[in-house]
Length: 340
Image (cartoon, rainbow, N blue to C red; front, top):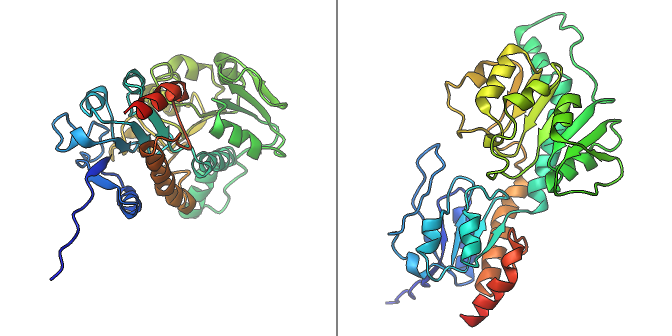
């Protein structure tokens, strides 16, 4: 008769997201005990933990996804917490101020497979919108014998990028040779590469044929595209959002689309996810809608669990993780880890 060795004491809390099983397996192979969080309420972004979560006292790393939340009360309720890992690139579900206040490192999924997948998808959407891929598909399905000459070439158009970080720069790099004029709005990038003009947001909205959003969601960017900004756009222009839904006032966008104030939009993200089945956006023929997955790929799926595991192990070992979102606390964090 054999007796199983006791499992390792849980040091990592992994919330219930699709790649949790793979991450748990990788960490378990390294002898790291993992505790799983409560499941999400379907279709809602909300905290999945509570201060009374069993075992939270021993948790050293919390891993969340874009569907989970790590608010201040959870951070305060985990006295041994060393850091937080967002398996995805977005950080809008993590209370970054609370993490800074507790000298906690926050790592996120800023690997190439993530942001370059979004960049590739954005270029695809630019072509699909301007060349009217949805309309031509409808023509085929309707059996239209003379579909006409709708659509416009990408060449010669002005592409506006709101945000010129990893994803925005990736879009610009992939548009080389397309014969387009690229303008960008990003107050944190004062010196863009040759061929990119930095402009104020109102000027971008008024002059671009396609406006694409590539910024993080925070209090300064929430609702940054509203009725005022949409009213500046040309009636022939398109809007793309592959970043986060709340960047746009969705009601204002719906009104603009229904009125034909802009030509159309491609939306991968929404104020409420998944997009409700009865949402009026689903009834419009001038939009492309995808379920927060437009840049996802087999390569990204493999990278998410691998990189998340690397980041967790680095935090537990007191090393700088590969992708740190709040590097300004790094020195304080290292001292705290050493002193502990």
